[in-house]
Image (cartoon, rainbow, N blue to C red; front, side):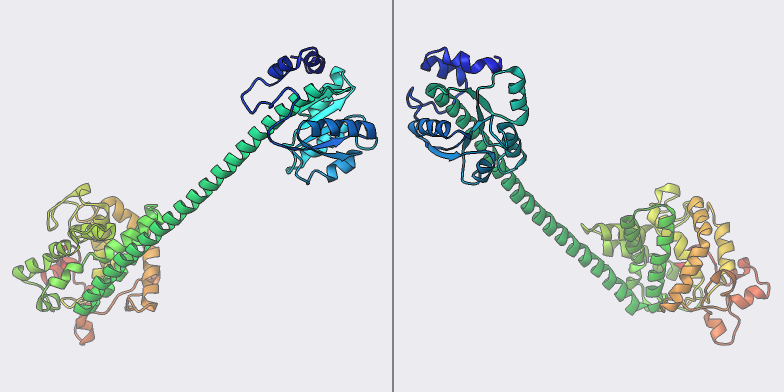
Length: 451
């Protein structure tokens, strides 16, 4: 139905029919044909002609509503904060006309949903389009018919009520969502804090196991910490995430926790172990697996994997399960490399330290045999970083600078033989003693000698 025909069309019908056609949606119907309603609303009547204001205000009051009046656009805008439910607005007014008043009403967030019925003698299509563009809710032509006014007021009040209910429901929904979101956020924060405390407890348990190892053997404890730091160099080379790198470092720290169960006489023995002693020493992998087994902690499970597999060999000749190749978990393969490097370049009760270059050459010979060839190549490529880290560990009290700490910053610890005035491994190598000869003497560089 065309807007410019609606007022005259409604007036051509009797009141009941007009009411039925103008309001084709469910809602509260007028109590009677004279337009009275069960709920009183406040209506702002705006017109620059005093007689028109008085007439419209009288009609509004006769319909059971409260009427507030304004003699112009500016005055009308000033009264909008008085709880107005609807505006009956004349179009042709001096100063601010009805179009501009409507635009300002719509521009204000506080009043943008306020129903505005334009009361006008203008009935051209252009005027109505202009009114719609300005934001008019409805139109009523002068002279105003009371029945038509009742119908149009009732329709706009119902629309406004529906909008208010919708906004109220939306606000209540947003409030519930905000409350639930806040509750969820608190729950997530509590879970995160619980996880943090649990993780901290697991790390604390791990550190106490390392402390127990330190009480058993201070050299083993320092070796554990150095290995953890070296493993992070390979982790970064493998582009592991920060969380994965941290997990690997913690797991590697537990690789020798099983040495808690090795007798001191074997753990601190100077010189080569006999076959029976070697078998006992090798059992530290299984002891570590038992200590760390049965835990629901990822930290402990990862530590168990490393404890059980850090002495496996790429060629299957390791222990305790003789795994080979990629059957060995990645963490175990990484640990095997950094374990041999650190153990051989530092002194042990059963042998002196071995020069870094001798160790590196022997490790190269173990490529594809004892060590994962790809990981070993990666370790060698990152060797400057590893040696720089060793130098920093010296300043932290976790290593001792050696006599071969020259180009590249390699670090070693002088062996027992050198400390007592005898021939250490470094001296033997300088004298032309081969790695094979060292092996015969019980000072094997690679493989099982680092336990």
